[in-house]
Amino acid sequence: MPKQTLLYIGDKEITTLNRLSNEDVNYSFRVVDIREIYCCQLLESGKPEDFVLAIFCKTEYRWYYKNNRGETLSLVAKRSERLLLKAAISF
Image (cartoon, rainbow, N blue to C red; front, side, top):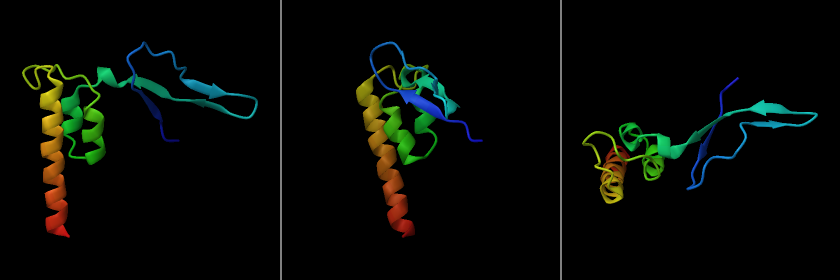
């Protein structure tokens, strides 16, 4: 059975439970605070959906983004533009 992950995006501490259950269903999933994911992991994936999620992620990773949201947004825009150009050329 595939494993499911809930990405929490918010300023407050996570209070979401990692399970749904009632008399008919017993379902569990992993809960991850997106601020604990380094944006470079997503930006290096090459997937547009990961680029969007990178905007919400942790940005302090060595010298990479210097904890600057503007740099992250700029990099997301540049990488997205490259993907769009590749798609247009291959079409």
